[in-house]
Length: 485
Image (cartoon, rainbow, N blue to C red; front, side, top):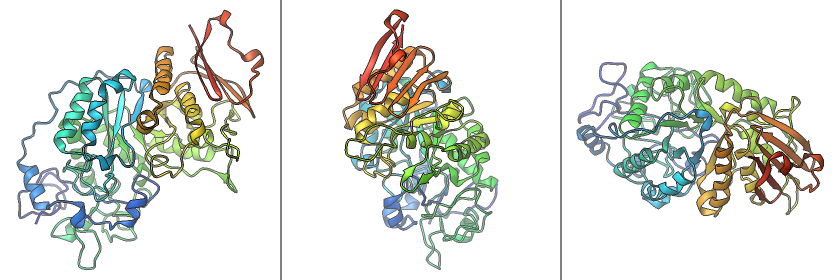
């Protein structure tokens, strides 16, 4: 029976194996908060059991004997300033049901390339208890519900050659155990539970770890990993570097990043792909509500995001405050206007992008908020209004696969991406909010793009004049965009 191996042989507590051990074998535990492991994962056991994995011995032997070929020799795209990133989430919640998702995505690469996508965020690559990948078990086993390891390598190679950078969704806050201990607790990664419990935080309320206290928030669905432990961090760094060098990934999307300290995010970045690369973290901050209405002032949420970013130094965070403000509409079946879209007290945009645009990853929906889960969906009536905003404003925009392909919005979204690139709008471009009233919002970005949003028809003197070089570049329901030649 294969036991857990967290280190490269001579370091720290390591479970021994009666089979040949993989030198970079990793353990991690799952959790349950408002992250990607949500509805289905709350109903599952935290252990892998029969459904979560094929035989551990067979997997270990195959991994240990496999040649270390990988994509190390594949040329990588040139360095791109992070501020010029156009990211797309390359999957939805149910993409795992396809069985060969990696192959399907590979067929769309010419379209992604033509659309101006610079980074494609891919789902968790490892074997997992949950089909979506957010309850990982065997990290080095890349045969998942999305396809085989070979199909993933083929996809990443094709993306790299097309100039698109694959971003891995890394779930390192937690890891599912394969076996139960004598008390029925899923905390046994091998045949010696004591040697594995050291990797689990001691204050985990369910999984009885013996490590340090958790450095972040608890994730209840599975054992939280002890990121304070340097041996565990070494093991995670090994795995991330393997994903980079052998599998072809160019950056990380950190799932449930609030589950461990920001300083460790900084360490994982510095020891793997390094600074000056696009990274993004999922830190779902609570917004302020009055009864059932979202409040205008979201400074508390903005400050939490800013404080965490400072700790990581390099990692952007999803701009949940901007999403909330954009989709807060009046009640009623025809509601479509974001009632809170104003300037803050300093004349800046009200979300994270108003305080730190270079580190704000803006989005309309993702596999958690929208897709088949519908936890916090953007109102359908003004999804394109959302894209018009994030693609004409500072921040790093992240598009959603389902909007592009399943909703038939590709042409409209691509037009806005092309406008952004043509106008040279970056994450750090200057934003001027010219009007922010109850029924109209007008802003100018980079000095050469003006957007008007809202149901009011009369813009008065704010209408961009053709005589000044302005021309209409795009329009849709409740928005119009002008570009200055």
